Every structure is written in C-alpha cells, then in structure tokens.
Image (tube, rainbow, N blue to C red):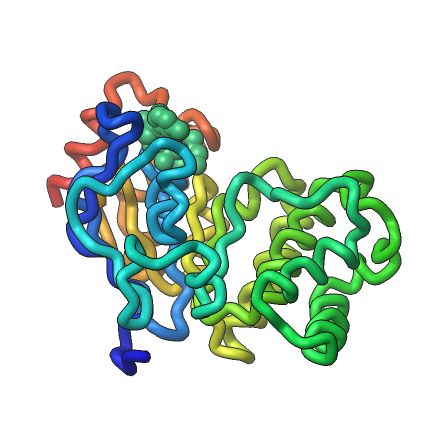
Length: 271
Ligand SMILES: Nc1ncnc2c1ncn2[C@@H]1O[C@H](COP(=O)(O)OP(=O)(O)OP(=O)(O)O)[C@@H](O)[C@H]1O
Ligand SMILES: [Mg+2]
C-alpha cells in the first residue's frame, strides 16, 4: 500500500469502444485522500466511461484503454480484477442504481459484505450501520428491493457499496431521476461519511449545481477530454461554468444541445 496523498491517479487516459469509437482522450485527474471529487459534463462527455475505466469494467462493454494509466493506492487498475479492486477498497456504484430486484433490501446489502469477504459478525455490524445511515431502509429491510422507490433503491445501491468498506467510493450520477429532497438526503449522507469517516468519493454528475455544493473539487469533461479542473468553489464562481453547467437558462440535460457545442468547449478552455 502506498502512502501518497493521492489515492487515485488517472494519467493521460484514452479509451475506445469496439476498437473504433473514441470515448476518452488524454484525461488526467487526481483524487486526493479524504476529498470528494466530482466529474462534470453533458451527455456523452465521457463521465461513465471514466468511472468504468477506474473500476476496470470497460472490457465488459467492449471498451478498452488505449493510452495512459490508472493507479489506485499503488495498484495498476488495468491489471487488477474488479473483484480484487473491491477487496482493495475501490467500490463502484455504476449502471444507474443497480439492485437485485428479487432479493430483499437486506439481502442486497448482505451481498455487498459477502463480495468483500466480510465475516458474519462484520456483516451484522455493517448492516446496522447502513440502516443507521439510511433510516428509511430499516422499515423496508424485508421487502423485495424491486418494490422500493427509486430513492430507496439508490440508498440500497450505496448501502451495498458501503458494506464493502470502501476507501474510495465511485458513484455514477447518484442524483439521476430522483426528487430534489431525496437527492439532498443522499448527498447529506455522503457528506457525513466523508467528513466523519474520511471516506474518499469520486462521483460523476450532470447535475453540476448539486455536485459543486457537496464536492471539494471537480473536473469538467467535454467530448471525452478534461477541459477544466479546480476546487468546487473556483468552479462555482467561474462565469463560464455557471453559464454552461449551472445556468438557469440552460436546463439540466440540455447542455449538450447548445447551438454549437464546440463553442461551449472553446469558451471554457479559453480562459
Ligand atoms: N458501450 C458503448 N459502446 C459504444 N460507445 C459507447 C458505449 N458507451 C458509451 N459510448 C460512447 O462513449 C462516449 C462517452 O459516453 P459516456 O457514457 O462515458 O458519457 P457520459 O458522460 O457518462 O454521458 P451521460 O451523461 O449521458 O451518462 C459517448 O460518445 C458514447 O456514445
Ligand atoms: Mg453516464
């Protein structure tokens, strides 16, 4: 295990799908121990691809890294099986909010502990901890996860990851499709885990307003390239970011539909 301040280092990463479709080009970013880093960007910017590469799950989608390296706590991610990454503490919540729909909420959570190789005693205490963090799941512990609400399923997905005792929690669009109050509750819990337990978090969000409220730093992707990085505060105050990612005139999800998207990139990259 390395003891550098950098927990995850993505260095000049390029990736393609099906040997042809370029998805990432020259993406570099660092996640420091104890921080919450957001990856922001419009539809198709490369957020999910980056997180899949970080979890070494690209090949399952016929994707491939063509250049660059990803290092997690001294481990070469591309040479480490996803299950071994989980055991090393890199735990992803990708693919929307994937839950095992025909298992109960509690069984879903237990699966996260088994995946890590936890003992029965560890699983029992981690389970109580997750129910303390997400009290609304307590009443639902015996129902099928597929019958839980969207917000509860997201809590189950995050809770299952926490059962893996992560050191780096990797989340793809935790806010997607959820009501603002549920989004706030989930992000408040993530903030608590970060502040009180020092959990490091890397999350992708189209919802830059929410992400920049909770993250300490962020990287903006455009067309598969990192065009801007900074502290959340810096990015919140930059007019260009406000206009393209937070602006009230540009509704969420329509950022990619700016009349000429390359202009947007030019403005952001120019300063
Ligand atoms: N399985 C796949 N096969 C081929 N191309 C893909 C695949 N997944 C993504 N892509 C392409 O790679 C690029 C990056 O997509 P990615 O899903 O990483 O973007 P994203 O930022 O997560 O977008 P969104 O906000 O819509 O989730 C896009 O051009 C997309 O069409
Ligand atoms: Mg995505």
